[in-house]
Length: 559
Image (cartoon, rainbow, N blue to C red; front, side, top):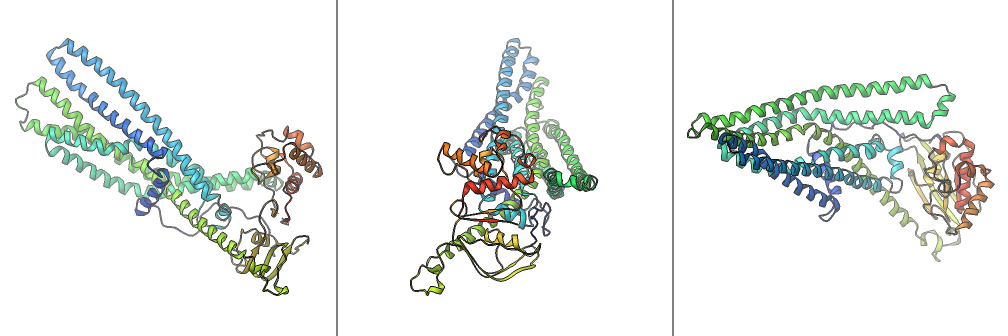
């Protein structure tokens, strides 16, 4: 493998089927729901049930509020002043209660959004950061574009969109059943049948309009990630680009990605226009349909014995029932755009889940194979073996007839390599660029697999084991102490002020004593990017400070 750093790909790999509202979407959506609602006693389930209770109460209050106009018709027609005052007070109370319930509805929906995002993101993180999965996904895997965007942005948008329509979805079965019964009681079979037919037609039309939107939305999110990746690439490599005076060419390349993104957004808006026309048309047709349903029994003489005042009151009541039933169906149709967004994000998150699960399984299988290969009898502790077959206890790595090729292209780098790396021996591997020096370290580190042969690690990673220094130093966010002890999460060893003395001594040994004053102390939080503050030489020296602190038995430095 060429010794240059592998750069994460922002584009996809092999062509995949276009995402749609199909069985694959349903499977991925249900898999996500199983993560959001793991058990009945979970916090998310309790919040969901609370939201259900609030929306049910809200619908009961809405029904009472909806009957108030018909009651006003009767009271005003009979000129009942006391009844008018009483009804007005009741109406005001119902309005206040309804406002409170709607506010709590929105509040709990927002809490669910935060909780869902936390649950889903942490689940993805568990798989993403397991072993070397994040490395394989970003460097070696070609099928998933922009995994960082899928975890940070797509999950956020998925949870926000889903929470925004949660209350409408969970209450729909109850409201549809109740208002269908009320509509049948008021208008006979014609009302519910005509309204259900209207909804079925609207659903079929919107399904046809939504399918192309889902695939186009997935494409747009990919291009959004590519555009963001380009800007991140310039931000991280601003100095090298400036040395090349690359402003104009990077301007051209960045604009090219922007134009591709904007073109896709225009195409998406064109497809959404047809969906908006369908939604708005069905909304306004619904308002006319409600009066058509009411008019049929009136003109057929069913209510011929009522006075004008009584008929006005009845029409107002029946109109509310029919209109609200149509409104329930209209709200479901109006959710078409939200559903199409949720479907697009579901496919992107689902693809990532499936890939992470596959890579996680491979990593676990690899770990099991590695453990089985650390058979002490095999490596020399079996007294029946000859002295020539014995492996010294200070051996860290043992390579037997290892053949190595580039994972992406299959280009052969190393063939039939036999190598033993032991404590106390210095090993220098030299060669031209692209001959496989760094690639050999990747195999020893478990990042790549050998094509043939066996690679056995007879030690562990970290302190008391082996530590590899990458070609480009890596610094996480955090204090100076956290940079020195990285990748340890806690101070090692736990020695209090003695540990501070060790760190200060190693900083002085590496010629970085002034870094303590620049940061304000070992534990002073800094808001800068370490790559912007440190020079390339200082980065290398801080990496060696880290190595001095960890004090491994074996150290590997990529050339």
